[in-house]
Image 1 (cartoon, helix red, strand yellow):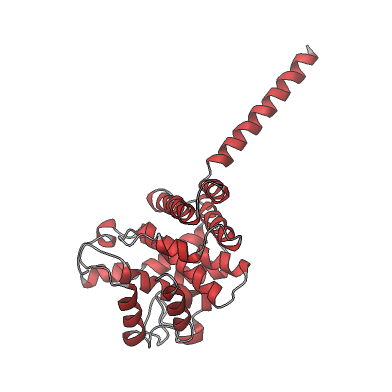
Image 2: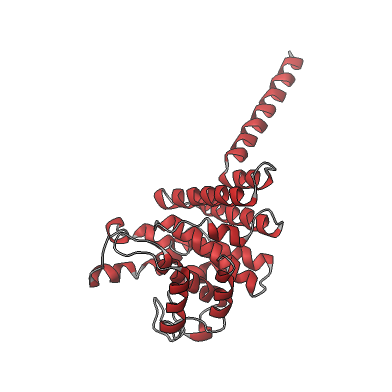
Length: 271
């Protein structure tokens, strides 16, 4: 009898380990790692699949209840993507080329994360800083999950009331992360301050210049570029050249003047 009990206990342990392994295998971030290690895919194919998998993770975050586990999975996906870049399995340029330029909140977040990590690499940030910056970029619009979807997806100009509601999303996203026990200052400042402007004309805190963290200034540039170069139902997408020219000539007082040339140089590499 004792022998059978031992055998049953061993079977239970094996089943538990198999179930745990299956759960890990089903994690989207694990799928990204698998894609990156696939010897049958070239860089462009890997980039497309990594981008698609990451977009699904972010879409799930926006479409369902936000939990610490889901936020961690988003972070893990960015870390997997970044490891692929560092290990030369994909490149920032290849990810930029497969970016989706039809606007959806979740693809916009992925685009901003890719651009932010790229810009961070251009200025020499460390791997640890890039991981946090990427997480801040991909979570920067989390607060939009708390805004009426009719306002977020409105196919036209917002009314003053709607715009006032939309302007709440950085602070809402910041509060959501605090509620989910997020404590990393890089991620939190990217979410709260990505609409702040160098001249102090931004929101929600109307801070300016170096009072805005370097990471939030990076995300701000990437956020604006993606908004300009993305097709909406009420406006065509600007070309890369026209978007960058507009940012350089019309928005110079709003964007970090030292970072913008690095971003322009980076985007020139994809042409």
